[in-house]
Length: 94
Image (cartoon, rainbow, N blue to C red; front, side, top):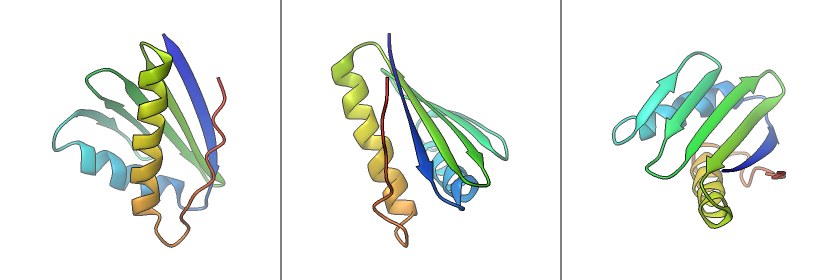
């Protein structure tokens, strides 16, 4: 299992988390609370946690290639919802 994480600085992390989870809830299994969300993709899991200064995003996947692809999916979707701030800085680390 490959796990990568990014800290995204934004004052609107909770808002973007809610929008993103609601967007994906139409097709995927999603767990959502005020400041936390988990999205279960067919081959990966994306977990997000918001605080006043940003959003922490964690992607877990079975291999590096899937993790890389899912990081791009999550980042692209977050940038779409955060269009006023986009592109958001994603500094992924293992």
